[in-house]
Length: 149
Image (cartoon, rainbow, N blue to C red; front, side, top):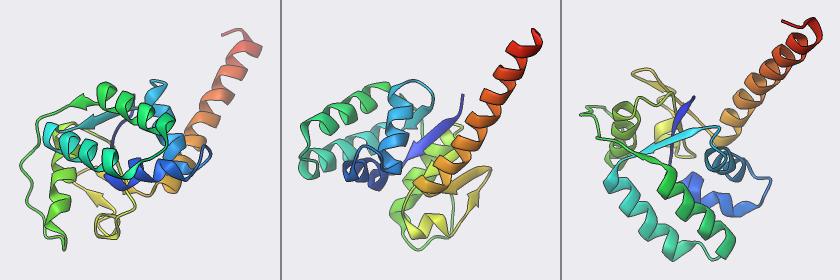
């Protein structure tokens, strides 16, 4: 299963509507199709921000469920030359949690593109990658059923 780190901005932007890319990705985590990883300190910080910024009670409940489901990981030690030093905690979570993707809307992180094997993408980029993989799996399942293999 794919392991991902969701930046705070992705969680908050899930408030943009049921069909927004951040909400779709959140729903993948909640349905068990993606595994989210997070450090304890990032979780605490995110919960405080979300309690202040998110007004929609259904989304707030989904986000609470997200924090219950997200696997707590030990942050890896990271040395990186990035403009916003606060972003290092997300890179630490991604490496510590062996995540394949860090999903963010933060330009400082997106400029890295890839960091020590972690692909850094926007929610839209991730969704497009997810859809391609999901379509390939559906095709494999269909041909398997037709051919009886």
